[in-house]
Image (cartoon, rainbow, N blue to C red; front, side, top):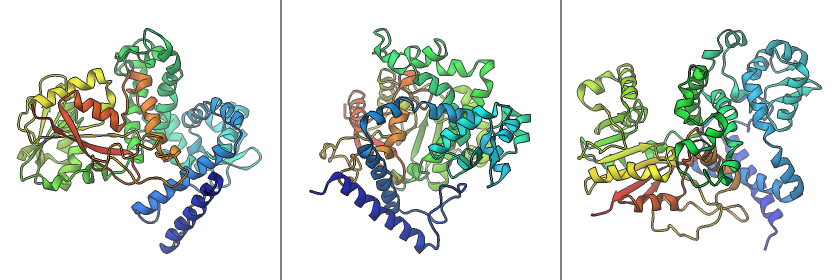
Amino acid sequence: MTSQLSALSNILSSGIATIESAYAQNGATFPSLDEPFKPAPFAEDALLSQTIDHVISAAAQLIMTVKPPQRTLVESSLSFHLPASLQLAEEANLPEILREAGPGGLHIKDIGERCGFDPSKVGRVLRYLATNHVFREVSPDVFANNRVSSVMDTGKSVATLQADHMSKHDKTTGLAALVGHITDEAMKSGVFMAENVMDPKTGSSQELLDASFGRAHGRQSGHDFFEKPENAYRLRRFGAAMNGTRMSMSPGTTLNGYDWKSLKQDSLVVDVGGGVGSSVLELKGAFPHLRFVVQDRPKVIDDAAKFWENEDPEALKSGRVTLQAHDFFEPQPIKDADVFFLRFIMHDWADKYAKPILKQLRVSAQSSTKLILCDFLVPYAAYSNDLFSDIPGANVPSAPYPLLANLGTVSNQAVQLDLQILPKMMASANAQERTIGQFIGLAESTGWKLTSIGRSPKSLMCLIIFDPVPV
């Protein structure tokens, strides 16, 4: 059998050849890490996306294979310096300062003068980030943006940001806000995760206030934390950060993960906990034959009314879209839904609370009602040996030897989200992302059966589809 090193090398060489060939066929070259980010000049197809994933996985596994394990452990233990450094870079507006400086970069003395912080310390942080391929050291003590750091740029002038810090993330991609949120309140929660798990009082708890968020920020929920006046900026940043999460998700998952066209004229889709209705807006545009109800808390529904008046007032006037105040822990008032749709709701709640939500929907479901959950699906690192082969979409194509079943680093976002990133995960509110097995268990205890999974290339976000179990 080919050695692991040789197999990994083969994946890399063949994958790189495929990537370069695809770019050449489109009259382009693969972008340099040294240049600011620009969108790909052509749409990546599923095969190219898969090839890129294999290259990423093989490169990371090759490094872990050849690097001495002692060095790996020590460097991993020290890796908290990376988010800490990113926090400073984001808060100090370093991407914007270096964008205004141009490709030639800027000396740390000038960077310190512009951001208002000690140039020696800022320089050390920038060098650490550049060593990890975030920013670029053009010459000694002179730094510039690169492909990675440029994505953190809000696009606003430094003068504007310094004059109005509160509005920094308004009308931006949200990626800088996401970095700010993760490296601030989220990272501080993560620091207490091990301590929280080992504490007999909190280790097995599914209660909101027993999460490690409370150890970091006082015994309070994320909602209470953000609503305090002194956290007004953090709340505003968090809203922008949620938009930033969409940059790493395939926009086609909601539209393509389920055969919405198969629903009959005027079929009713109920978006439970749907916020202002952004998902419904997307679905309505693609499938105008459907009717929709957006349900959420009263204050959110007030905002939803404003949202639809701006985006599509005719939808409300015609009755094609209805807004309804509803607490999903209470009995579901709609009894004739063809689809109950929940986007990023289940990952907000531990099983203790997720089960009542699904049970309320089961009570109100017809025999033909579909339950569709839009969530990340945490992939197993081990091969499941077709354990879920009876569920369409559950099994993904096997990765080439010797890659992990979930492609390792490629799945980092899902497993990291499970632990920390959003303020309602394990580190923050005892909630979780789930594996297929965990979704099956959740369904079996609430009167539903997992029947299929709709996937989209370049995304671990899925549509997880359930049928009601006959009573």
